[in-house]
Length: 466
Image 1: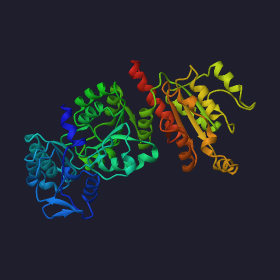
Image 2: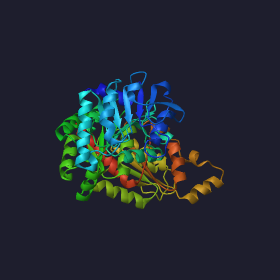
Image 3: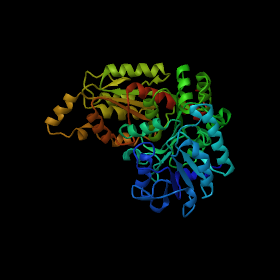
Image 4: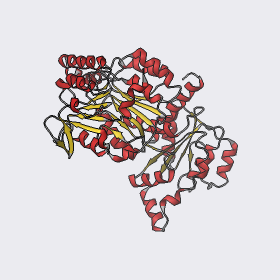
């Protein structure tokens, strides 16, 4: 695949928006979004029934644009898109994002129209993302073809590919409060031309992207996909959440994006053989992606757990064991170091339950330094009444937690997966202390799942059996 053919989708010189409108409904948000990006004279609006939209001049057709453009965004009725693409070709367009629905996902007639659209595009050398999609987001330059919360445009290193436009939009809505930062977000819709394999190849060669995360309902060309991801996973981690696991789910994907999702067991086996990490739910996708983006892959499966609650420690170690992880046996040096400052009631072992003592982060640092430990899951529980009591003493809760300088020096050597149970305000306070290099995961159980995925990925990179 020619990677340069996808460049206009993410770094367009000039953009034409066909179907620009200020009437509330489909196209309204996309129009405002493109205008508000400050593209200036690089953006051209097209609508034969309007002279201006939101104060910006409209052209009656692409043919009448004063200059050539390299990217066209189409939000016009499906039936006119083949002819619109012919007009686009006459003005130099090499990439088109077809956001309109009404194609293969609607049945045989829609499929026929989609085939006609693709034939026109191929004839004129135009690459297509869509139809039935929301397009792209590039946080590196702030370019987006779909409306999203401003905070989601803060640059990150997770490249995300989704078949569903709404799924990707909601993902971007919730990502900021989960500490997830994207490099690129692409929705494929019906994948009439550009597909998941093309986009994986693009993200694999994108310097900003460190992790590739996908929501898939099916794979268009299985052999090509597997050949690509076998190579890709050796260079960057690839995480997949796949819809259509059950017969009912497969029927839903067919009506949603016209995708035949196939037998789930086949996908699971193929993903595992190619080094893909498969997750089962959205929270797991977010947690694993953000951990991989900022944490090193463990060199083994030996995990230590540090917590302020013995019950949660027991549940977490149970989950780790169920997932094939090995509860690490702490070294005598680590035990001696912790005991030197621990109260008499503390049982220094793994899981390390520090209870109400102020030794939580000291315990984390101690086990991080242990050569018998490949990674750490830290689970902090602080009842809100304790927070209020600390504040009543005039102590800033963030400053009272710990000095993390010793821990930060160890983060490149082994992963530290952090989880909290408590109020949203407390989580925000603690995240400010931790910084973005120690993300808070959604639950202790998900922290165990994330460590398990990362350990298996580490085995694959090292050439060991998974």
